[in-house]
Image (cartoon, rainbow, N blue to C red; front, side, top):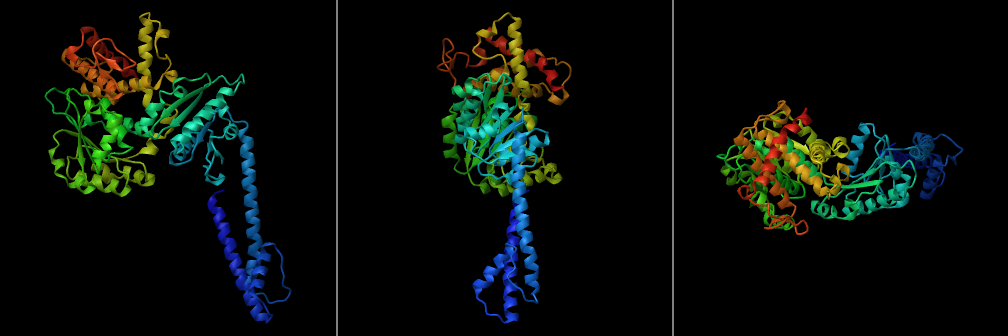
Length: 557
């Protein structure tokens, strides 16, 4: 039963009342009986109580119709209310038997997309939202109208028996509060059968806040029952976009003589900030030159200062060039004529109509083989239509709906983006064990699920750059041979690329160069220097990383 049915009943009741008032008016006119307006209003109300106050006839047709419609409307409303209450009672009874279900806290755009996708994949889904009624929740889910930060509400949702809890309220503060409550409730559960670990995924819309919170004990130390992880859909989108449309696929950056790769980013906001960080981590190519990123937006100088205040080392990983200009200037500006080795155009505009007009206009100014990718957070239906438009695809214009593409079951529960990062971590642990190293002495966990987010991010950076390395060798990951032969010349270039990538990862994590011993507390390292200054032992580590590329071919088959 949906909310619109209540509106239908309300409109029907109002029309019935108006019709009955008109009918009584006609009745008193033709009968000649004295009457007042209050009589008409009162007698019309009595119809809804199924009381008939008239004895004489004839009865006007309007009144005859309304005296039957009134009790039908009342009965329909009663039956609907009874059905809603019964459905709620049945759902609560069903919920008592739920085990290994998914709990979603917050049914905004993200929560709705996650719920619909999980339901389509036959998961049992329970949704908590204080601003939704039972009619608002998707079919095949159990909805609870309540405050997710209330322990009693979480008990009703049977958090302690769930498999995963996804916190995606629009408020970061509320998500953290609910995460605390979930952790408390799960930790207090002492039942013998409750030995499994429950995953709690907490969305943070601000990547800088996510970075700070990752150092908090709540997310650093997992209990034997609860495993709390922060996630950000904009980071997921950036990783997915650079995998689908990597700049080095569309420009020449494989030889030392090649010009620097160039990328155009239109719009500097919450969506594009993670893209800049992702480009800073993976844009290290065979030409060994810093990638140029052109960024166009209004008030870009002020926005740039804010981003660099959080990521002061971003300039060390990318050659950033800012253009403070309007949308019109972005489209028709002469700067578009100066690109020499453009690999991709990424558009992050919050206005839906501009997200459509800008890429079409930009297409006329740059070569057709260079993809234009439009990332949209609104207009899901529109972006779905545009993403399949033959005319736009023929122009190499692609629409990427951020929420729809990042909230799939594969990304949320299966960690599809992390398949290679997990393999890198497992291979490292296995290699160390083969050497006889006691991994218990490491300051990180051997299992991916227990690994601190900083170590996971390090593995993700290395994994995402493996795609770049394969392309540098002339292979896309869908056409890899059984084994790749790497020449001495290429081996050296790839090793230098790996060192550049590693330095960028460290720079963006706040590390700086300092001579002497590595200092994890101060985040300083003597290895954050050029390749030629490294010892042979350190250079060999990067060379070994390249030789090990063949170990990862099997993960793409």
